[in-house]
Image 1 (cartoon, rainbow, N blue to C red):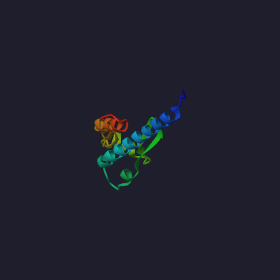
Image 2 (image 1 turned 90 degrees about the vertical axis):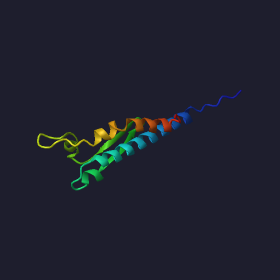
Image 3 (image 1 turned 30 degrees about the vertical axis):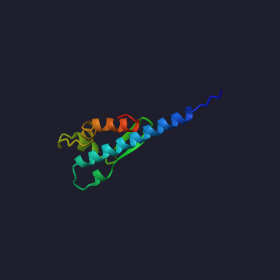
Image 4 (image 1 turned 60 degrees about the vertical axis):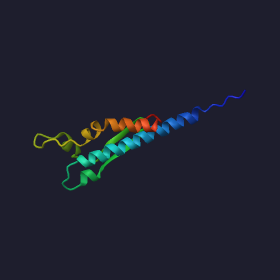
Length: 105
């Protein structure tokens, strides 16, 4: 009897699916944030992006220095959340993305 070890292939497929899930979630959250982002010049909205930084982490945000002030407000400016609701209001869709990529319905 011959034993074939497919551990490496299985682990590679798990990693591929994780990254696919994170890419889709990142794209969703950025698109949702962009719809909620207040626009003056459009620079903030244009620079909102996502990056998969590991097999279990996707980073969403922008490199615009005032993004946090828009999200959370300041003593002189009311908060205009766009990242927080983009995530929290889409938890069901995020779960669906994960289920779809794992082959669950």
